[in-house]
Amino acid sequence: MNSLAMQNNVFKIIRGCCKHILQAYDKMNSSFLSHEKRQRFSEKIDAEVQQQIIEELSRTYKGHRFVAEEPSEYASQDMLDDEHVWVIDPIDGSHNFAHNIPAFVISICYFLDGEPQIAWVYDPINDEFYSAVAGYGATLNQRRTRVSPHTALTNSLGGTEIQHHPILPQLLPADVDCSTRKIGSVALSLCYVACGRYDWAICESPRIWDYSAALLIAQEAGAVASEETISDHDVLVVANHQLHATLTE
Image (cartoon, rainbow, N blue to C red; front, side, top):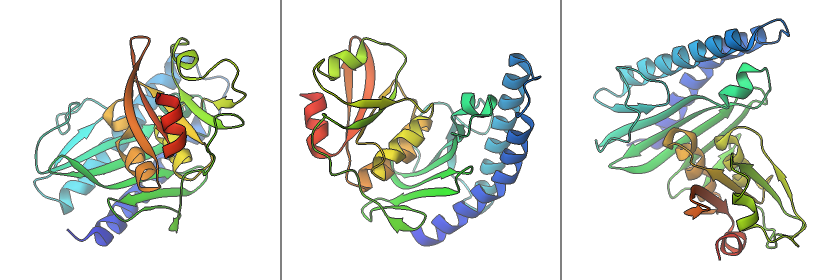
C-alpha cells in the first residue's frame, strides 16, 4: 500500500465533492426555507456526496467495500470484516449543514484487515484538512499536530457531543472550573482534540462513520481514547494521557 499516493488521491476526491457541498450550503442561507425542506435537501446532498465518493474510490480501488452513513445498495451501515474497507461520512454535522451553520466535515477512513490505516477529515468552510497514517502521526494542512499539553481539568476546554445531561456530572466533579463546547460534529470535535484546540472530548454513542477517521487522527496526535458506560449511556472519551486518566478514574 502506497499511503502517500492514497492520501493524495482521496484528498482530490474530497476536493472534488466540496464544490457541490458548498453550492448546496449557500442555498441553505435562506430564512424562508421550512424545516422539512432543509432536512430533505440536506439528506439529498448527503446521499449524492456519499455516492460520488464511493464511485470515485471504486474506480481506483476495485473490490474494496464500503461502510457509510446513508442507506445504499453500495454501502453497509455495519462494519465489515473484509480486507479493504472504507468508512465514509459525507457530511458529519449534517444538522449544522441543514441550518447553514458553518461547522461540518467530510470524513473518510481506510481500514486494512479491520484496523484503521489512513484518515481524512476536511472542513470545507475553513479549508482545514486533517489527516493521519497509522504509526506516522497526524497533520493539519500538512503540518504536524499534537494534543494539548494541559494536564488538569481546571481551566480546560472540552468538546461535549452528548444528548443526555446525566453524563457530564458523572465525569466532571462539581468543583472543577472548566468550559465545554458542543459544536455538533463528532469528527470535528475529535480533530480539535488532535490539534490542541480542545483539551478533551466526550461523545455519546457515536457511530463508526462519525468517529473512525477523526479518532485515528486524534490518537496519532497523542490522544488516548476509551469507551465508557456512564449513567447507562455509552460514551467515547478522548484526551491526552493525563486528562484521560482523570476523566475515567
